[in-house]
Length: 289
Image 1 (cartoon, rainbow, N blue to C red):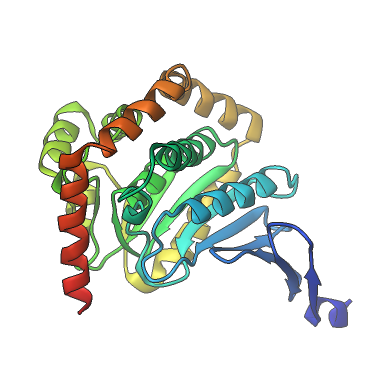
Image 2 (cartoon, rainbow, N blue to C red; image 1 turned 90 degrees about the horizontal axis):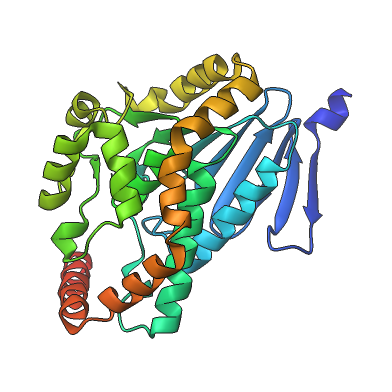
């Protein structure tokens, strides 16, 4: 048994999930952009984003993420998932702007459908989801965190979280606005969305955007201790309660999903929006230079 537990077994699965391995009794599977470590005995899994340089939500990342999440939802031994970044300092910089700049309507529609799918799958997941926010989390990074049942953020003033779409000349979708309002309240959300506000940890905690702020080296251990409390609740009662609280918000998107896709493609294709994206991308290039 000891030898088996200590062994490393590599399995090359001919699937989109890529490499699988067993390390010290814990199972792992990985694709290019998401690493998943599962601990069946504890009932938890850790999903680590690894889409360098800033864990942007590209179409490929979105697809691989949803596939990985679906696999965990089908694993009866897994009851909770911790979402975090493999690269400390950046949780996720948000949507990949290159998926929106200079693209044809068909690609924009495919991309936005994948963004919707990510949000719906996370927001309605029967699993307990805890975000261990170990870096900056603007826009799409905040979207991922907002879907979680509990949010823990590293106490580093350099890290911020929020929906800053307005600063880029674009607008957060109505369903993400609803999620934001449900989390921090209508007036605070209205204020934050219009100004594209990004909150450092202390302010994010104060407004209710995150549930706890802890020292950076304690983010993951705190996520595990919080997960233990959530998993102490019977799954059926917690899942039914979660669905009761979230169903109306999710249904609002589901009923208008195709219209939302078309509105997004039409909006992003506008010359003024493409110009705003071009200016922002140029600024990013100058920063890198």
